Length: 224
Image 1: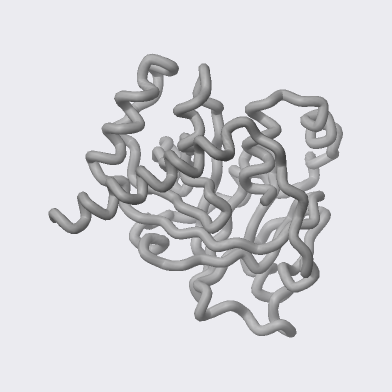
Image 2: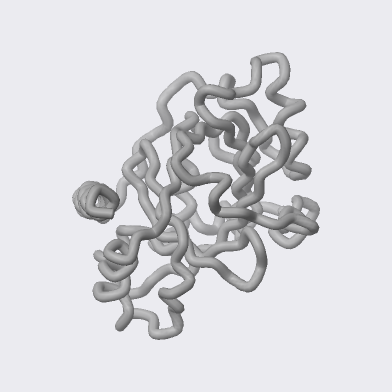
């Protein structure tokens, strides 16, 4: 849940935010270091069922699945029409990916001037007064693992296709291939219980938005 949990903390600006801000992450791998000397191809992540197998963060959490698809014009237009007045600086022509997860959280990915670095716009922004500024970095390493880093908090995730998850005795070695250095690191196999539910006023609305966005995306794909 940390992926959506971090988003929740940023949006709510609650007292829990201080927990993150007080963490000393200066010696953790930065977004710039994580993406150094890499070129990201969006085709390498689309239409693959990814599963988190390793975490670098302070929260104990369970693994979940992530799936990327190309951001269709109709999908981008829906985000744009609903949100453009909130932030006129958003360049909607940069939208390239749409992310869905098994924890009912979805987001639009917009490219930046750095390969592999994206601004993400969550679907629950439809219920907000301001679009949160969320920057994430993505890269693929051999033999096909995906790394995702939260550029602000320097939390990182290692993912693999669900049918190509590393063997239990090779998980640490597979995670090291991302080249991320940080604390609170653990395998998904150490998390055998459900994390607490994060109370959010946007949760129900976001699930409805996600379902509608998925339907519209599928309808567009069938027509084309």
